[in-house]
Image 1 (tube, one colour):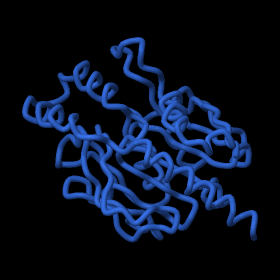
Image 2: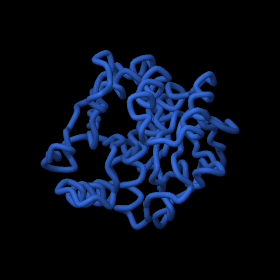
Image 3: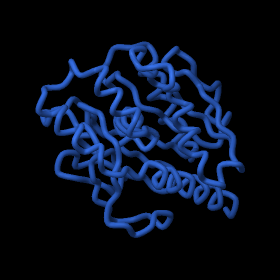
Length: 242
């Protein structure tokens, strides 16, 4: 399967050189799953104004996180939302992570906005429910978070499959061709720890210290990555059988 990583943000320039840009974070995340060898990944720098010429150029799309909001007046936001709608209409799988989660919801008729709850920061538990058939019947998953914006209203037809008290719409699906998650499965503990340090000016001390205390907890990014592949392969098998 040819999978495009639609890059909507870049690693903060204040980060040390050992940290790669967003597409590499995703390919590293998938690398431990042996099924990855069956797929290819290509980065498309949407943040620089590029999009695939056609939704049919790739078999699936992963939309990354970003420091931007869906409401920002940037020249690539509206074209990306139109591309999301076209891909969804064409039954091409979409996976959204953090900003990607928000812009897919927004493009398909939901609503994302800056939350009055403040920063979601650190390793947080997401309760799981109404599991799709490609997801194990686990009670919860622990994922890294860094966000102010949230999906405040799900798009029509969405099924909520993950939530917690801070982020009620933390994970959702639409049918078998949309999967969205607010957390960052592609981040590592080292990455988020360093990012919080270099951007400590953004957070009040209580929020920052509380988030740093959560970093001793494991996070399940690679487990979620395996679910992402199961989601994509399930869709592929369904289309092949149709």
